[in-house]
Image (cartoon, rainbow, N blue to C red; front, side):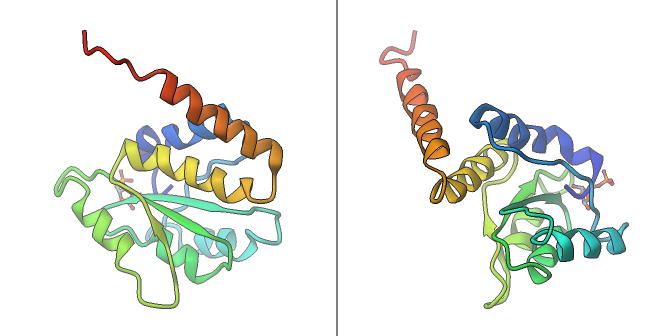
Length: 151
Ligand code: RP5
């Protein structure tokens, strides 16, 4: 994530990955304030064994796109809700990548943070049958948790 202030949103990604039993790391890497850290992180991600990168950032949210420019791993972008523009700035910054450097862009805020974890897990589950099973169980539990009655 681009800042410690993004953790309030991105903690939902970490919690969802925990619930699915997906190993992960959480780091603050700012495209603007720590560009060398971003370069080092993105350039070494694949060699360190990472499979998917989930990048959450707000405002002028260059982190997912810059990460995608420096790794061949799938990059999922979470637009963090900004104070000034409610995350529309984050969303447009992340989603409007030029052809050739894709970022899979999720919804603004908590929903996007959760879905980034689920989508990342689904990517990993293509080659991990145990994770695939856990993901299907998570989905079934969600379905079971939907009440038929509102009261
Ligand atoms: C972005 O600027 C971060 O991703 C964060 O969403 C936003 C504000 O960062 P702080 O000023 O709170 O560090 O780079």
